[in-house]
Image 1 (tube, rainbow, N blue to C red):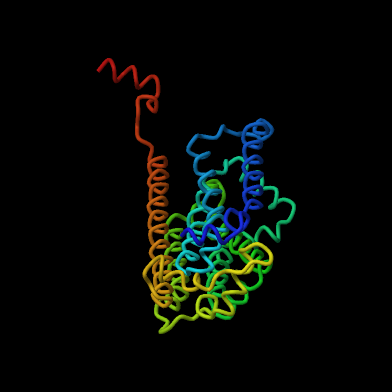
Image 2: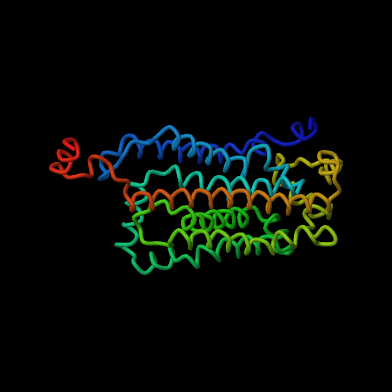
Length: 310
């Protein structure tokens, strides 16, 4: 690992521009939830748990899109897949749960009022179901993957599109606005299962391919072009770092690829399983609220007197 840290520039290792962007996002979050909260009707103070989830989500995005894992993800496919798990499976639901409901309600109703047609399209469950899984599957087609890896700007645009699509997908699974008419709890559980099924073909392609399918990790010429974006201008990445998975994981390129597919599928199943438990908890809370446990406060005053006298 010494060669890794000595080869790459500070920017290539720590992505300071991403740190600045995420810090600005955090400051904006802090300003809205503390200084501007009183301007929103029915606003409530943020809890420490919400703050922790938001910071954890931003941290996951940092390590998913940059940081020391950025260059390493261009050399080890399973690391790259772990980065995708951090952003789209971990960070997105944490941030959605961390954002205050009054702020989400304000933005949601604002879009509904100003652009109702766009609102109906964007928040349609079918779009949320298909868009992320389609983009994820398309991304992992070998020709598309290698093309995006060779084009930093296009790759960044695609990552942002995946992030927005993931937010729509998780919106319907987490239902951050219970007051909004959306999927019933039973349909939300079915929605989670459907997402798990739709992501499976892409994972299966990666796991069961008979050989390594991405030139980024198998062709030294392509790899060297990809890695050129991670080093100082005019520098070269030593060819000894090619097939880094052999040294770090004692895995050849094919096994590294299979590990990447298994990692995504297993982590997705764990996250979706936790989500189903979260939905069940919400469902039981609603049922309990609707049934209403009879208490002394629910009994009329004249009946309370009769009960005490008897």
